[in-house]
Image (tube, rainbow, N blue to C red; front, side):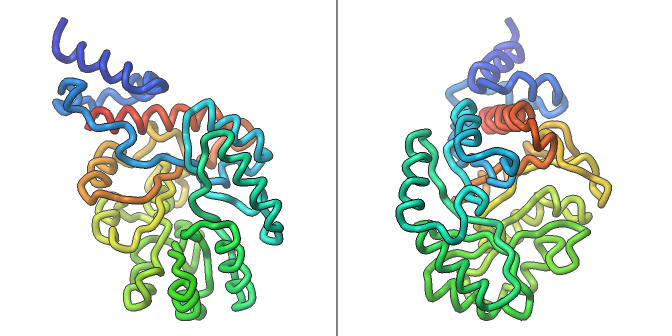
Length: 285
């Protein structure tokens, strides 16, 4: 049996869900993938999670059941699963449910906030939930106040970019230019797909802004313009192996959370394919 066949078999063995990814993306199976299993990257070298918005049509129990099937253990908490006015008892019960599924809630958001009162409420919520990362979309005029609160609470605040339709934060460069001179606890939740849809290069931007990227919404898109839409991780126009290599190069310490905005009433197959593809790439690069 040739080395190529050996490596392909190893690739499939290392990724429980990776078969679809390999079959749909043969072009990136380079010499890196022909290395032995011993030399392959650990599939857990990058923490993989799910952005809670992926489960907007499901309750917490249903969402955790899907995560358990895929063995994904990090969740960015959306307020439709844990409302902002939750009591201490409700928050404790929420975390207990996550623990029973071997899932950790590592951040909250995205949360929209248009006033200082809403900013105050969001930081109080984040503190009570017990996480040190919030994903949010504030008004530009309020950025100094957000930076002040982030420093006061010792909570990292990641501003989410939403692509060409977003007239405030369309891409990572716009966010960087707004925050670079503010407190270091103010950064970004880097949505690589929306960044690509705004005509930017997500791989270069990952390297450029690494010091202020606190969270990543992991996705691929069908086109590098406003017409592009979310698709399975291995099927779009972003070079995912190159992106993963950059993650490893910069030693990205955060979570990459899959945000699957396709088939949102029946997302399991697409998310599972994306999870398998990502783990397969980590094994091969």
